[in-house]
Image (cartoon, rainbow, N blue to C red; front, side, top):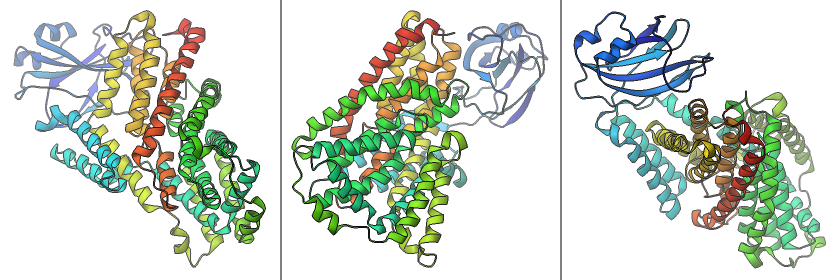
Length: 563
């Protein structure tokens, strides 16, 4: 092992750990294959100990009054950043940071310490209060959700500024999920232009005809199409395509669109869980755990769980909405077909070609690995050129800019409270709970804990940053805690994060897009409206997914847990 130590100083210093044989690093369950770094904070007895040349580990332990391990992690092949929180005294002249590694060669490392000031001990609590305040504004609708998110974003930036670590403008812009924002902008533009052709009204009449005028069959048809499309497109794109059809259809036949729209949003989250590309959390899990999981493993492990939960969800929706989704529609289908034909066949052909190419590119994502946002943006630009190069401002009116601004501000809120340590605190707490469980039942306990905690937190905290925070914690957990494997934890996180999106209106991007489309058509869906339906659905689906995962663990995973 190698060691480097120096007095704690709030200025950046580059260190270079040269080989110095001290024997193996103790603890941590290291396997001798990977390089590990362990970081300690030591209070030394005297200055002589601090300035000793090439001290051995035993000499450092002899000189130390107090030793605290503050970090232990695996060293990757590529450069990476690790954030550690240290608590030191006000006058740390006898405090040193000691870094040990089992690397066989020189290891370059740069260390920078930053004081969080008087707010440091309270930052996690402050972050939780900011999140609670933002959600209360959205829940009570005291302000428009876009304004609530912008206020929350400003509050997080103010707290960071008080800690003397206000992020740069480029950093804040980087916090916004460009993939989601680009996808939304492109698809909103494509859908907005396509609406001018009358095809959504025509499709609504066709759906009504296929259902035979039966409301329950119509709901089943819409939910089935939504779930299947969400599995192979992403659920935001699916809602952008399905919601306009539903709104036009309900307006034509004179029924309330809200039960149908909320049901579609719920099934978009359920259906998107089935594949690696259906929901953003699955994409994150697949990319970060590429050496363990592939597209087929997502399909084989998650799709059966989705098929198992879907009938229960549909039955619940029928029971909850009652007469709103039961009975016959009193409409004349033939008359509707004559009233709502295709109004612009030339533009429809152009839109059909562009939309067909965009959707085909989405389906080919596992092969091409093209970012869906780029596909949507290029399709939108292509359609703008084909639509009218001299009056593009008319097409841009179809973009719901307040929705895009809401997403951008919400991303800043979540990333900001992440900087304040809230997400890291949650993830580390879950890791400690798993480590404290009995060895024989540790993997089942980890599955149950992760699937429920990720569902609940994803309902109230955007599931994209939460998933990105949890995956490294799970890898660290598997490395350091005996008796668990990464694959079962990954499936638990996928089910929890995706199904948790149904818990609240802001739990998933598809929910916000659905509510935005409804508002444009004159049907307001409040946070409470969605919560009354979505949260019980979340509880139901997560419970079924938990039983499914426990069954798989008993049959297949437990025998190889921790290997």
